[in-house]
Image (cartoon, one colour):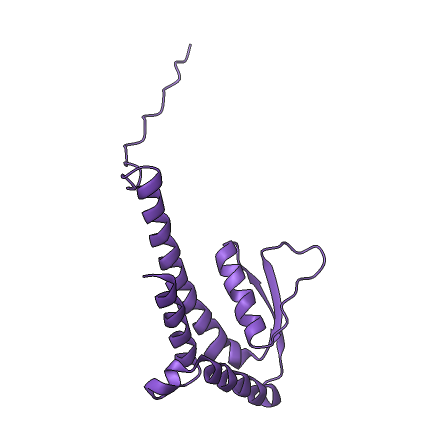
Length: 148
């Protein structure tokens, strides 16, 4: 998958989570974002934002999550003393459960697959053609201590 196909796939994921019903709607990423923002505003009235804490140790996942939050005008932050891997956000729980987190998980899966395939291709081309995992060997026997 090349970058342009990846970007298009990510846009389709967003459109799906926005509730797009036709092919034309699925292609309109801007409209999808607007529908999601509208849904978020509707939920804020019935489901007030709650503070959530996320620990995202993988830098790619953290960057993606921060970008999604900002895309939907949510303000990520962390408290003084929290690790860089911590992301805090105030968001309606229903929006988190029904839209934001499922979209993040799906995009993250696609992005990780792309990054893994790209990394494998580069390693095979530039470093070594054998990109297989390390061989599995039996563990060495424990040395018995001799007593006197």
